[in-house]
Image (cartoon, rainbow, N blue to C red; front, top):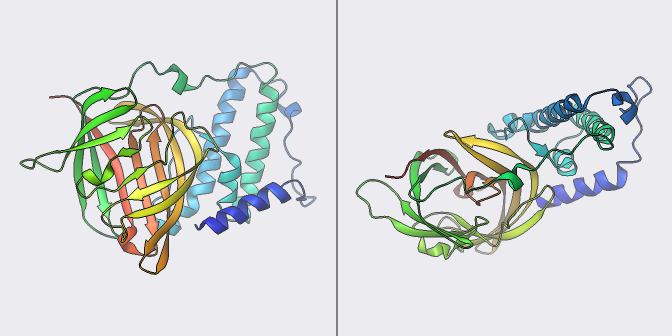
Amino acid sequence: MTASRTTVALLAVSLLGGCATEPSDRKPPASAADFAGWPCDTLGDELVRVQQRATDVAYAVDVNANGNPIVFTPGTTVFWPALMAMRPEGPDGAELARLRGRFEALEAAARPRCAPPGDPLQRTAAMPLAQGERLVYEERAGSGGPAQEFGLRLQGLKRGELDFLLERGEGRPGSPWRQDAAGNAIAPRAAHRLLAWTRLLHRDLALGDVLSGELHGPQLVDGTAHVRGQVIAVGPSAVSGRQFHSATIELFGDVPSGGSITRIDGVMVVDRFSGVLLRLELRSGNPEYALRRKLVRVEPAT
């Protein structure tokens, strides 16, 4: 989806959200009074269920659009304005509006008497990765290219910086790869043929945060693309038995290509505590700019 569609949709939600009317045969919107007698545990469970159902509705259309929908795990918290604005109107839009109304009513019922759930990010006592461990990624470039694996082995932890060794396969020497604690690459051109990003992420990403930065990579004609994004969900994730607390970011941007501009959009999922990438998907009308990268396992230190 293009930036202009996102902007128009968000503006429409903000300006017209309070003006919509419903047919007389529809149920009245939920209110806090509907849940006044519910215990706190039940309210919390229903808040999770409503958000999970909303993500299922919002991203079901992606199966038809690109065959690779975003899947959130139970416990995910979503940013409702972006979730609703980025999806089509009609029955799906009506269902999302109903779910948002129910969510807000549940929140209003819980707020005066139930303790807010703690943010797992604030309870994290250590990095989700230890020195010597290896992140193994599967990457597929282009619209139908073969999948290839590469590894990032953590060499050292410094204040505000993680030092990795980028490993492309047995018998091939590794090369240094550095990122800051938010997940941005440091000196990305030093890595061999690996798409990276700078100035895009910051620590403690929160719902609704608006981001802006650059992509760098050999597949980009001029080497750099400007990209923007918004955090649309946060929640727990698990890879290879390792627990992360992720932020899901919708991306869109421009790739200079000679005298023209190519649009790209996609999704990035990163660990909020360490900046470790969990998933990246870029889509474009130009298949050269399409890419999928995901963390498939974490190998122990050797």
